[in-house]
Length: 326
Image (cartoon, rainbow, N blue to C red):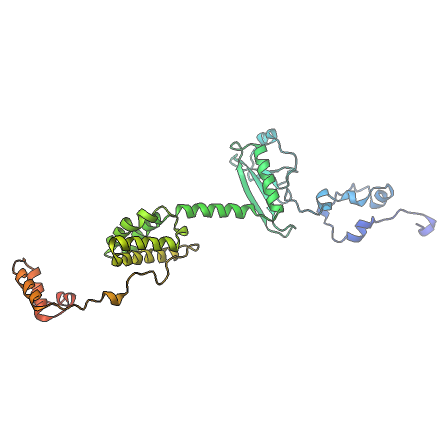
């Protein structure tokens, strides 16, 4: 185009650079030698698009060596991994495909495969990293296949780290059985707080553990609790069934206070009896009192005098037994 003095010069800016020069980071541009200006580049027919890194042109946000290691991405080989010596801090060796697959070399010499990715895309998305396996226990090709599978799940909206955490939580739940929780309940709750803790232990050992002991406590259902109580009621009576329910209710409440994921399956209405149905309102007849009095003459001290005193005073057993002597 015409310029001052009648001279003609080449276009200074490539259209891409001219429209996006304020937004393209210098980290994505291969800077030419100082002697080579944009004038000469444009005049020689070189497009400014060639100056932009391939990752930026494709619109991706690779999680590679940038901000993680000074090593460039290369095709990982077994020889390269074997030859890599440890440093004073973690060293990352990134593979070209799939993006985010690499090897971490720790200062102690341990080498492990990993996969790094971002959820949602973009540099502002949170970066996550999951270990695939230790080098030596798993081969390079095996690790690469796992990374490719995880990359496919990430592209479909999955999250390998969240999947790992869910699997770990599931294993912990499976190990937390009714039997193990019952043992902890006795040691940490019943013994320090209840003098009759042995009755709690007896009920758990005899009625609960044989039927539900190996079941994960997070998977115990209300139906299973009801079935246990029905069986106890049929074989040992409704009163014993309610005692088992009382111990299970305390155990579940104790576990619920300690575990965010646990919810007690016990609800109101599962008892087999009502307290007013068990009220003791029977009165002894004269013949029964005479028989008891005659039998007390055969009993030794202190049982016989205590029972006779109860007849004389008509006091409750605990109230009379706690009275001062003299």
